[in-house]
Amino acid sequence: MKATQKLHDLGQSLWLDNITRDLLTSGTLRRYIDQLSVTGLTSNPTIFDHAIKNSTAYDAAIRKKLKEGKSGEQLFFELALEDITQAADLFRPVWERTNGVDGWVSLEVSPLLAHDTASTLAAAKDLHARTGRPNVFIKIPGTEEGLPAIEEAIFAGVPVNVTLLFSREHYVAAAEAFLRGIERRIDAGLNPDVGSVASIFISRWDGAVMDKVSESLRDRLGIAIAKRSYKAYRLLLDSPRWQRVYNAGARPQRLLWASTGTKDPKASDVLYIKALAAPFTVNTMPEGTLKALADHGEIGQILPSDGGDCEAVLAEFVKAGIDLGALGAQLQDEGAKSFVKSWNELMAVIDSKSAALAKAG
Image 1 (cartoon, rainbow, N blue to C red):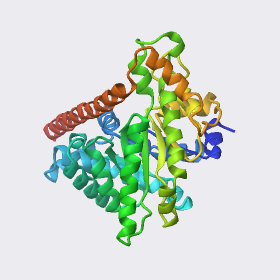
Image 2 (cartoon, rainbow, N blue to C red):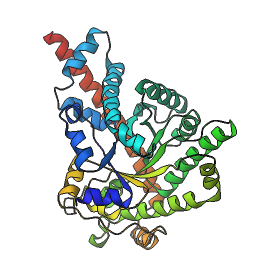
Image 3 (tube, rainbow, N blue to C red):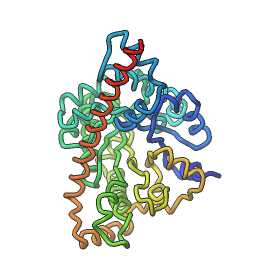
């Protein structure tokens, strides 16, 4: 039995952190679903930038849209929606079989809106309506300005993948925003079953401190942060407030491990997959990591619900001079900026491809 199936059987969802038109049209994504237990998919501006820049698969669609007078952001979102809806249709049987627990695909609002609450909410509603699919999450960053948009989107019935979370505190704030939206739906007599996941980024922690700590602490910070966050997740799920909304028909917001590709060339390529095995969570992984797990991976011990040794490990980092709160805030800020950078590069690729295709006739 492949490690991917073992992880799935344990109760953790394996999602692919990638989308390209080639992946969809070649049958590769279908094969991952059938053979590697993949039950969902996530995307972001960087993924689409690489997909469009490194492929001719989008050229015909870009030509068609140029003739329709479309360009820039409008043209990109039409391309993205074509990919996302095709992926959503592939995962629809999973979504139906699991009663909406699994089988989701994620599309992100423009990262230029990360610090604009009203525009983020408007974009989330518009994109979700345009997908016409029930199993599409709209990704909204869990920034200070994103949190009110998350609450309002949930209240409006828009399923949300909360992205750019880096710490227990970030996660709890996002979970509270989700919960407020659900409670408001219950008070308004609306169906409280609105899907959501909260995505905590793992590997960037270790990348940020790699040259600042001793060898004995190498590649241990991200996992300790994950364990601390998982403890908070389990406590929230067990709390009377959350259980009241579940009793009213709401569905729990699941914790999702993101940025789980190993950045350290000295470390195992399945480091974060093995360490973060936990039921009722999601691990969204790059294609290379997914293949490595299927090829030679082993799943590790199930994450302890009490956080295990996380506080002792984190205390060692504090002792080594790492300010965890400040670093978490820095990573979220840098993450938002990196998505903006990728977005700007993506728009430049759209413009240059459009110009070249128009010139070629």
